[in-house]
Image 1: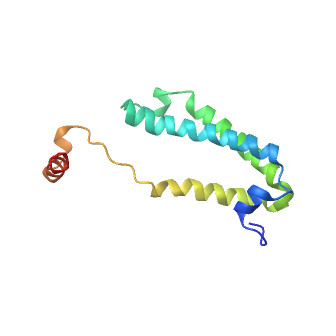
Image 2: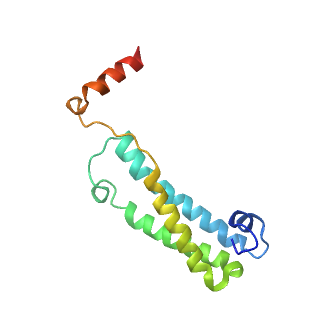
Image 3: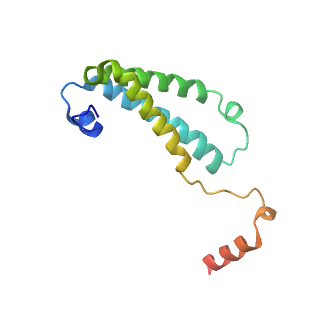
Length: 130
């Protein structure tokens, strides 16, 4: 926040925030997250594509970069009246927190073949199915 209000209150109800820029920023951020989910969940988990992102979907990286930069600019314009010169520092801190929080998301490992599954895992799976 700004020392007087927490960040959530500033984003939702502070009158100084330029809402039109924030809405564009949220839309661009949603597009960026959609591209990320397409690459990590749909291509890797659903379709089982083993290729690198640059080969499987070469359009994704440039689009994600562009939408991410544009979202950052929109958030900068929207929050500038509140934080002034500290807006880039606030944005960088939030970005790093968002980026590093992905480390704590647990993704289940998918075995590459039946030989990669240990005997304990096989027993656990058969018990779960019974």
